Image (cartoon, rainbow, N blue to C red; front, side):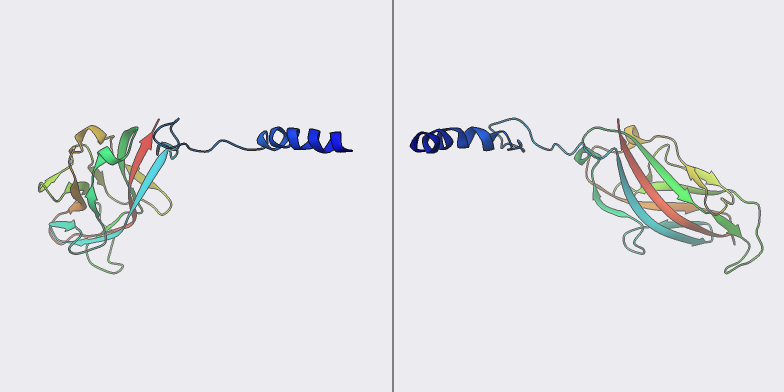
Length: 172
């Protein structure tokens, strides 16, 4: 019995060490999580309403923006696209008659007061449940910290609404 106890004490660490899983190790050892786990990062920019020639949905006048955005904070991102669901253009507010008109939507760099190249979407109506997507504009995002908003350009007396508006970042 004494030999069994000694043998058990000797084998105890080996039995339970095989059940342990390795986790992230600090800066002196192998890397832990590096932030590349998500293949898609989605920024919900809300819903937009515009009436008139040009509207900029920014951090000052709506929740449709991103404060202190820096593409460098998102490792491995190889594409960025602007996505809009359910666009409607009308001659007046609140259920006015539908008109055929292409409104222009784009991600707007509020810090440098300019649109982000290739983020534009030209669209008339987008039916419920469908969406429009911009070109990939990741290479056109500045490499600095900026504030982003959404600009809508329409004709005079054109009322434009959207469902959800998003900025999607993708990793390979």
